[in-house]
Amino acid sequence: MPFTRILVAIDGSECSDRAFAKAVELAVLAEAQLTALAVEGPLPAYAATIGEVDEVKREKDLYFNALASRAKQQAKEAGVEIDVDVRAGHAAELISQVASEGSYDLVVLGHRGHFLRDHLLGSTADRVAETAPCPVMIVR
Amino acid sequence: MSDIAVAAVLAATILIASTISVEIGLSVALIELLAGFVVGNAFHLDVPSWLTFLGSFAGMVLTFQAGAEVDVPQFKREWRASLAIGLASFFAPFAVVGLLAYYGLGWNLRQAEIGGLALSTTSLAVVYAVLVETGLIRELVGKRLMSATFVTDIATVAGLTVLFVKPTLWIVPFVIVSVALIVALPKAAPWFFGRYGNRVIEPEIKLVFATLFLLTWLGTRANSQAALPAFILGLVMSGHYVKHRQEQERMRVVAFAFLTPFFFLKGGMNVSAGALWANLGILGLLFAGKMIPKFAAIYPLARRYTAPHAAFTTLLMSTGLTFGTITSLYGLNAGIIDRTQFSLLIAVVVLSAVIPTAVAQRFFHPHREREPGAGRPVAAVPAPEGVTD
Image (cartoon, rainbow over all chains, first blue to last red):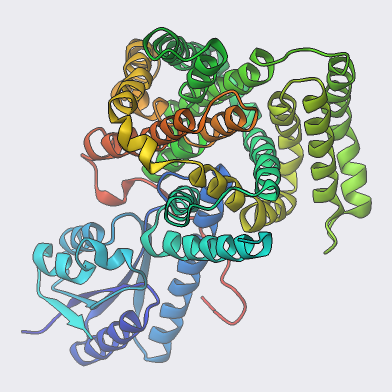
């Protein structure tokens, strides 16, 4: 079955980088449209100062915007057109939601993210595999 | 254990708390409080005098920063609508907890006042984080909520400064210097910061610290507390910091790296697990003493001013953390409350940071019906060097 619209989730972790590389390969092979989705996780819960919230948000915006730029650059080097979407929210929910709304026929993502919190309530990959409306490719 | 050994243990604890905070996405302050609780109870460490000193000063820095983080123009626009919610949010739990502690728990008047103040607060930062996360910070309801929180906080710091004053002659220089600094510092700051700022030796941070030390010393000599002038000083400097974000960021770096960890760690170390275990019923009573009056007083006003998010607003106005901790630590340091009372107040403060926030986000999230990405916007920032778009 040819894939025509591929959504790849990126967070800058090693697994995510490998997932992105696989998604680019697949997009070249299938001549598919590729979209990268970078999800900024939540701000620190129960902060003591506004400064802590502001600083974390600024750091996240900076990091994910740089990640988006890097994804565009890598896709360009591979000769693939890409849309990059940076959003804030709950990663698994957003990935499944975007996959559904955008009528994607494949979601590609790494099997684990950066931090311990990515594993506390089950991995994002597990939850996307359960809730996505299309096939999900989990890259180790 | 020697001072340096205690310092080494605490420095390691602070480091571990920071990494845990990043890994699990919880505020570092909350982790530091919990870490202090664990270390204090596991190792039975006595709080050394240098930690008390650093913690007290960090409390003043936090108070100054809280003032400096207020959006004054927004408050000026919304203060009428927010005044009722903010004052109700302060006075209802202050009265109920105070009366409960005095008549129900047998605390003396000053202890009951500390209890009332500590549990009347609303956490500006907890409210702000939720509003940013939900995107409501850009809407009228968010602006009113932030302004109302500010009203509650200023009532708390005013209560802390005014209620416990036993004036000596030093009250005169304390008031004169406070007023002089509040008037002069915003005027002198552009010149001073322009001439001496933007250097690695950070004269602008030293200027702020010097004024806070001066206020703390004069406040102590006057048998008062410098929370109110420190907060107002931050407030009058907020306009300057809006124009000079980097100065505020550098101040935050110094505070987060060195001062506030000791403040929260010290708070946690003074919480006795045994005292909490032995007084679980009182803990529940105090928690109810904060929540029920907050709900009873705020909800009817919220229905009028922040509809259709009245329940969400009420829950967020019921949170507390930093000023509750500052007030409780002041009471402990001044010998007004004992360690058991302090433990109970801090436990209620932490519970009030977590429970109403979690309930608000889980059951009353204003954007639950919308798509998951409808909340916090992501700012477009220029890519760092080496990364091209």
